[in-house]
Amino acid sequence: MSLSQIAKSISGSPTLALNEKAAILREKGAPVIHLGGGEPKSRAPLDAILAAVQNLNTGEVRYVSPDGIPALKKAIIRYTEEFYNRKVAPQNVIASSGAKQAIMVALQTILNPQEEVIYPAPYWVSYPDMAKLCGAIGVPVYAEDGSFYPTIRDIEQRVGSYTKAVILNSPNNPSGARYSEEFISNVVQFCEKRDIYLIMDDIYHRLIYDGRKPINCYDYAKDFSENSKLIVVNGVSKQYAMTGFRVGWAVASKKIIQAMTNIQGHQTGGSSVVLQLAAAGAINGIQSSVENLRVTLENNRNVLVSLLRSFNGVKVTNPDGTFYCFADFSYYEKSSQKLSEFLIDKVQVLTVPGIEFGMEGYLRVSFCGAIKDIQDGIERMKWALDPNSPNELYIGDRKLVRDWS
Image 1 (tube, rainbow, N blue to C red):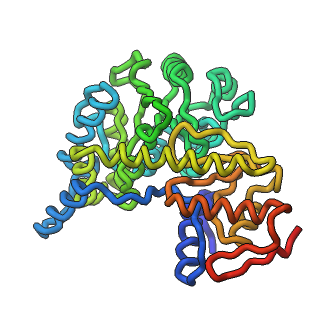
Image 2: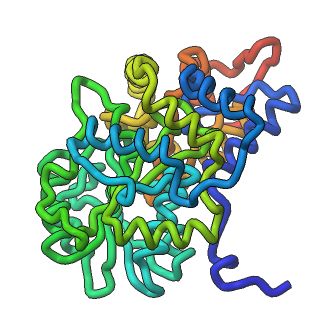
């Protein structure tokens, strides 16, 4: 069978594959603990559910405009004014099937083959393949000091004649790092000066801890004309725990949004009207669910970090936001893929290998699940990795015996 070069170059999403693997194991009755997931366990807001049900009850579920229904655009405009202090028009907004599609369509809008898009490492697993889908090249930027916090100098050193865009994801998946105000200010101004597109992937921007506040990229922009190359992406999946609704959006100049609309119109025709109404319901509704989720996640983070720091040799950076901890396990195994497979095979705990995020030796460990899962999962991991652990471990009525050194 003959496949395209792009098809041959793209691999499946490792995080989605893990979700599928966890589901299969659970169907078989295996006591698997999924610490690799990116899905809050709280319920979607009632306002979102009621808005969707109301539309379904009419039986009038029809085609809509590919750039989003007026009700959702109005909600996104209000959201942008409230959280970004930026007034935009409906023509500055596109609603997509998740923030993932918004980013993908944005990249298809601005990238030509062989052009480059750069992003700090560790990076979200989809950025490199999204670039490939455009025939472009993804270029990771590693902080010179080895941390999760790059400087503007790190960015400048990777920008070349083929650089077309920069993507910043802050707080960052997988590290949880919230980039500093100085860094974001510098990148915004640098991109304007160099006439480079800047995509702000803000999907976690309200899920931050320790009294920190979201950083508003518009505060540092000077160009608000139709020539602006700033694209801000967000969505309902993380902050409202609405991952399955698949609704995200982008805010940009009218010219960019029109081009994105043209592309999206040929891809999906836009997100479902039912799901868009649900997203509008969440944005316009009572916001206590977001703060409740944030507080729960902050507590979960504290528990997870404390447990990880009890390991010999594991290096942990306290996450500023998101619901992931990106810990260095290279003390036990240099290959994160081998280590991740070892943990699922021996103690049925799922983690995501760091190599998928561009950094070997690390594991992404999620803390968006139940506290008991976090505690039990880390206990199993420690038993599997620590040679000084007891020879036996009970998971329910099942006895595991260490048969490795």
